[in-house]
Image (cartoon, rainbow, N blue to C red; front, side):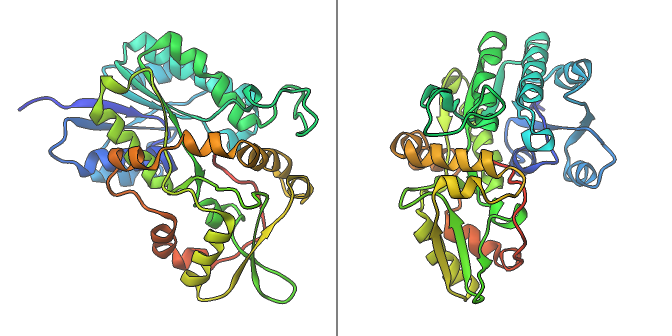
Length: 324
């Protein structure tokens, strides 16, 4: 029997990594095996992946030697960071650097780095249109990932995978429709009439699996993925149909969104402003046809919303959002 090539997946019990592990395991005739990397192999999520057939290995981004052991013997590695766990760009950079170093040390032949744009290449720190945060960032969780590219360029053969806004933010992070004073549901976003590329979290992992399947031809490339590029008004119409209640789109200004007062509002206001102000570039870099070639089962916003109808019905107060 031919030995399968191991893909080591950081964050295997999370949104992106879990989708990749499940995609590998679902393709029983494929050439890859899944090594699920997690901080706690006894967690419920880790046990579920083990039951599906994954090799489960413990490692911690704060312990570089554990990462090297977790990458040992692997053909590929999926590298990702978790900004919203700590909200520190410096920690983000350290975690990226540790993964790149482990890949180099262990001779990993194909790395996927889950990344985003460094917005400072489009809007400088001294540009008054958008406030500078923490002294050196415009959108810290985007900028730090973009800045970390240099670690991977020097360390290992890498595909740079630019993700999109998680539609799960409408469920888990308080960004979905909320009732106004009259009881009507309102979807509030500072996107005007511009388009917001988005994706189901599970599809990110499936696209990553598609990249590993294509293989070396995608090494060195920056690949953007998205399930659809809807406007806020279009999403409100879909949510109206799916929830069976009218949903109104409330297009506020980024400055208004930054002032909403929930944790992360200022950074998220900057994030949406970047996507609004540089919309043509942002959308163009996330090719829908190419995304579907990587992942033929790709969901659009309507199919995702229909699959998550019950969860979308649970409207909560805004909190920190976790993704792209």
